[in-house]
Length: 98
Image 1 (cartoon, rainbow, N blue to C red):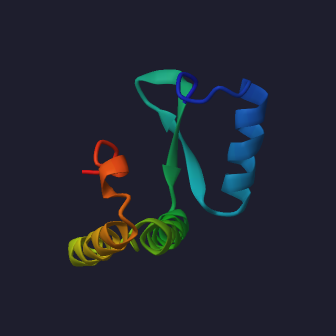
Image 2 (cartoon, rainbow, N blue to C red):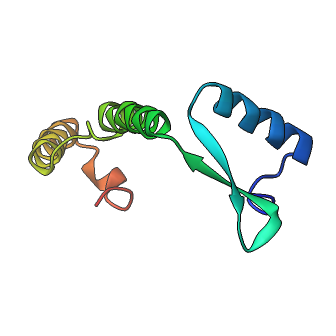
């Protein structure tokens, strides 16, 4: 975690302590390196991660996936073309609009 987390070790340890107290992670000794500790998600941690992922996915869907469909864009451009033609400004915008 040291290379992936820019916080000082004391901050990381306090953060992991809080996650451990909440039952979201568990510390386990690393057998091949007595100095190392592995942090793993507990079943409750996995459950909370899945809940958070669902909220994140819903936020992405609600805020970024509501763009107009291709049909709606074509309809808008068709309407805009009619407005520009009626206003006779099409030659002025010809180089700025596709």
